[in-house]
Length: 366
Image 1 (cartoon, rainbow, N blue to C red):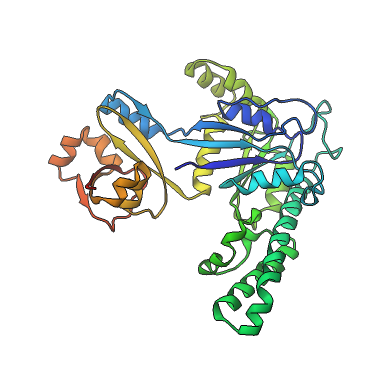
Image 2: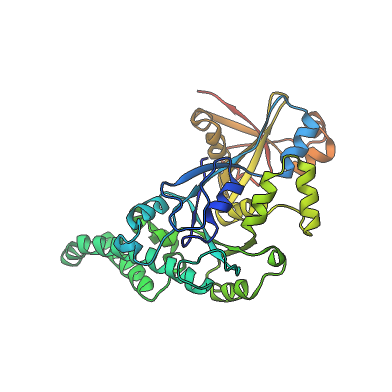
């Protein structure tokens, strides 16, 4: 499952520095706006301690973690929704991602230019929100104009419900709120699915802070948290500069020592990816054998056939059954054979809902 997160924010807030630390692709990082023009795409290995533990037990020929694609999208500016800066191009890049990582500057540094002349994370957030909301309103208005006359003249129930849903989202956006917080019944979202609204995407606010504020935050992060408390959004404190330093270290031991000196248990990169998984309601299941131990990404609520389809569509089409072991049972007992002998290997059918951490083998026939 190709998961893609887009890094957005105003110019010069640390997006490209964070992207460089996150991924195996390198975006140019410099102290001026529009440093990133084309969206850079990097691939991140998703950290999962369970994968390492399974590999320790199984001793496979290959270990394959799951990955996330990160897109570094050039900085938005006021007027982007009307084409200012490189607005339309940027907004098009945002439309294609699954989730938004909104990087916000929460540090003082006279040597780093702020595009609006001062550090104000709440204002910066609202600038981005406003531009995305305007673009969504434009999309809604076009659809309303297209269906309103026909809906009202025919009284068609489906068209009327579609119109009412669009109007509800429009009113919500016009009140200055993003589509993701609109109180619309889930089953009605089908009516606006074709619009691919920008502000309906899940968002994580990434506060780029100085080293001393990674653990405790500062006045800027507190102001931002207060402003988003009703959004049900993830907020993460991270120092892009520190992450860049960690990324330059070659050995795992050096990285851990560096983190320990800062009082951190793990890199901000790891915390960010884990938080992104939570944001998107994702689970991981594993396949484990002597040839390969591998992690697979699925959406929570996937059935066994759907999970099998992530490996190959033939697995889903010809699904017969799944043999399932729980991670804790496997680690405690030490092998698949031990799980089988202890009655901890369960045979599950098409209706089984996969749980996070399941170790699975699929039987299929095509």
